[in-house]
Length: 456
Ligand SMILES: *Cc1c(COP(=O)(O)O)cnc(C)c1O
Image (tube, rainbow, N blue to C red; front, side, top):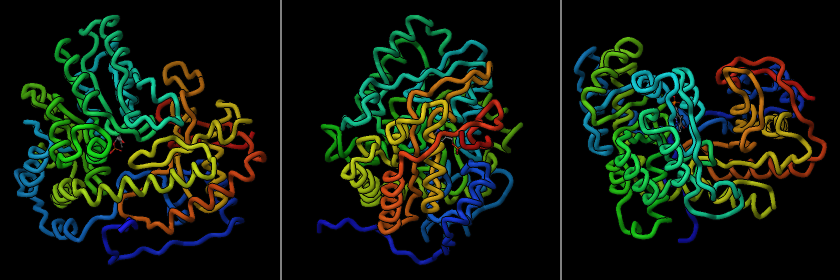
């Protein structure tokens, strides 16, 4: 069969509240032109994030009923720990309530003022946590990522030459760890090749620097390797995932992504002494080391989700459904990051709205217009998110201005995506009339979550 179907049936539904254009104009104004400040029930198709928004399976719900809510040493903890150890392969597992809590604990023990931490591209919470502890977060995306139109298969790769240069100029002592984000969220949801992972691992070992993976979308990355990298065509995706982790010394993970969970995360390492210090920090902020800010039922849901997400029929459907949207946009000549990433579609707002300069936030303007047009909520990944120095408050254009439409796992069908495509096309047809935006008020850290805007 050529038709790709959603490999699941729906047995529980949630109604969508359909609004009019006039209502949406009022709603987004009341939200001070920040889609984060809208009420979710006022959104028709919510593509704000794929984080914590997945549809859980009947199996995961059933497992939640088995949750052991004992304070210490619960059965659910051992199920969670053993599943993580089996797939990820690290010796020490530290549960946290979500990914950024794992980052906060990791950087709290490893980063000092003046530390430098390279990554292919730091996710916003990763960067903010490093900067919070006085470190410098350095992005080293591969050169191929600059060409948004090319179909280079592994645009999430790190620039190996730039990494070597950074180690040579800073010296290994200033670099407490090297990170790689799989897939590369901020850089376009693009995968990292096994070749790149192996090379970074070698460089890190030679320099005596620990190598960590930001593993949020490890299953999508592993499946891209299977479908795009020579030599992995016949390797089960789970084995590819295991090899990815075998090259690293630890990882941070948000179970809200590739574990289908609504909440959860963890931190892994092979260093027992480091884990000891991390557990002390965990007890202070998250909870006892056998639950780390999670209920027993959450630990159960994550344990089931980590296995389900490696189902290859699911992963084929997942990657193809994102590609479906990207291909149709390209057919309409609408500027979009190519090739399709795993979890999201990224409109290139700078080329979509070339008359709006970066410091008037074309990604934000596009997000607002798409909501007004059809009630679709996306998120700006650009100058609002990355264009301000938290220490000086100075503004500069981000490397890219994108509008991310993240696709929740197993939530929307193809007809929902056809609706999204039609809405984007309608905004595209009236793009010349769209104005830029200005910030009315914003905090210093992670300003995109709560900033308020107005039209220029
Ligand atoms: C979501 C995400 C995080 C943070 O995880 P939370 O669960 O949202 O705290 C870190 N890195 C990447 C790449 C992510 O996508």
